[in-house]
Image 1 (tube, rainbow, N blue to C red):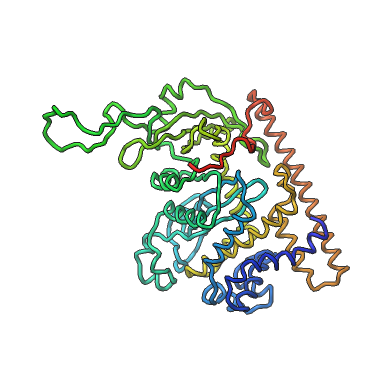
Image 2 (cartoon, rainbow, N blue to C red):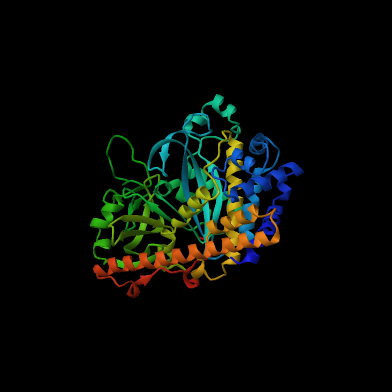
Length: 494
């Protein structure tokens, strides 16, 4: 960033926050909005309401009340964030990602806290879990929606619900059900993506996949190895033989013929001639800071087994194996290569795009304090989530504007560096112009240093990775690539 760009950050932040003016009815909450967002963009170590208040000379209780009880429309703020994304950052290659993230908690008072799986720590832990959507387009990524998962023990406990202000219309929903509700809301706000992707937790849920298809959304979902289906369309019987004289329980129809049982996909890949007679194809999936990732893949037309044990519409089953680690992943897509504007490379690119939400989580937590909240109520936690989304959106917009339109160069400026530049502007607001210029120059040199260091590290890691691949006889320059291409990105719904 140039000195002039750093100097303009304060004005840009004021302009950005003005987009949410009608979400705040009075001057007090509008001023506290600015304080809270500035606190998240500052270098405050723990970005709790208390930490931010002390940094900006506000009473801690005032900022806590801003999250808990002061009147403002947080749901409208969420809608506004999504509307800004839909209006200013729409892209035909945008991909939506569904994932969850846990925050460890030591007590029992925070809404939704329970012994449950915490993906951040890779174990069952006492934590709060949020379901999140992210939006990723070339040169731009941000959080799209966040919602607390309320465990069944909480949903059925009226005392705890009342103590933590859980609304009466909030019932127990599984994480996939919550994700569908979030997707519905983003669609209502005109957010469009070329496809959605998710991990096994959501991919194993047939109702979730059916829900995406019913909403005319394309998906490429990771699924577990015991996922069931067929690689040849099975025979479906709609009635039994009329001459049958068998006694006993009547069979239900329609049903799959007895000689066409479904199979786990790991067995299909291992034993089915459709896969056994197919050679592994190597693809350069993406280029990371650690170098190129190369996976061997196979794919076939697939009929997913629904809740009634019947085959659904045609899908594409993809099995991928990392050439270095041997890790195996399975994906199911509701589009098949050969359909209009659908290529296998594009399906692979969507399948392996979950890195974008992981990057969003890392930036939102490390830089903006998404997991630093010390509030307990339903409304307060969600207000913190939405404010974090707004802060992240501001950084992503600045990053995209100052980093140029070329996605190949999009890693030159990071969200972390934007946040650091905003912190420099905040810290120098009361200094003389000459002293501010010195601080701006220091920030610019620091960014250049880190960009140069990151570039050198990336080059070094890439050389190491390429050497590892060469030892396996793999020349990454001679294998197929899944690099972004406008020619193979579908823009039409299912």
